[in-house]
Amino acid sequence: MIDEGLIFIVHGAGEHCLRYTDLAEALTGLNYLVFSHDHVGHGQSEGDRMTVSDFHIYVRDSVQHVDLMRKEHAGLPLFMCGHSMGGAIAILTADERPEEFSGVILISPLVVPNPESATSCKVFAAKILSHLLPNFSLGTIDPNSVSRNKEEVEAYSVDPLVYHGGMKVSFAVQLLNATARVEKALPRFRLPLLLLHGTLDKLCDIRGSHIMMETIQSEDKTLKVYEDAFHALHKELPEVTTSVFQEIESWLQQRIGDTHPSNTE
Ligand SMILES: O=C(c1ccc2nc(C3CCCCC3)oc2c1)N1CC(N2CCN(c3ncccn3)CC2)C1
Image (cartoon, rainbow, N blue to C red; front, side):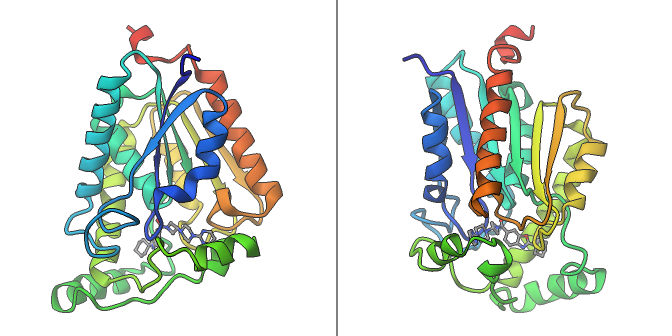
């Protein structure tokens, strides 16, 4: 069966691409060709765990993967789906290759830092500390604050490919750099967009998705808000995650064939 299109899944910080197997299988069942990779320092890829010298390394690798798949599957519409930090990578990848994509799906993307965790004082302290003690740990994320689904929390907590250590201050500074680069890229963003965000996301504030909706040039843009849902919408309570998968599938099906770059001349 000819593939309907290509979908590049971009995972978030501390996790790995195999955690998106459920989503990948659902999309493969609809004849999409799904591809992904573990970012440097994540999952089965090399590098110190959850460490990167410059956030752009994640974007560079994603652009290279997109270029490779585009060469091997010319003529198929190409979409991207990013979660959290992966959402920031997806926005910056689209900014470098806007002509390649037929649309972008973002699940609780990192657009602006949570105002409580990134006050100007804390940001200043983090930047100073990053030079003095780059491996200083800012602590770990409580997975119970990321999903209300206890089975998903347990699965995440025992996953050997997940990084369970604390976030290094140097990595947090790279995430801040990412939000600054995303802020500059948003006014240039004009691709079809599906945004999904929970109102009780304590990690990536939903205000970032509202700002994105107000700032981008896209005419085709949708924000689906999940009341009382936490950060990992694709790993949340069944009623949330089922809806997320359905929203993604129907959004893609409505855009296959009418926005492919080769037919937008
Ligand atoms: O990409 C992220 C992530 C992680 C930590 C972050 N901290 C910031 C701030 C820090 C201060 C400076 C500004 C940025 O942004 C982050 C993004 N991810 C992916 C998410 N994980 C969380 C755990 N997961 C989980 N947990 C329970 C059940 C299922 N999945 C998987 C997804 C977190």
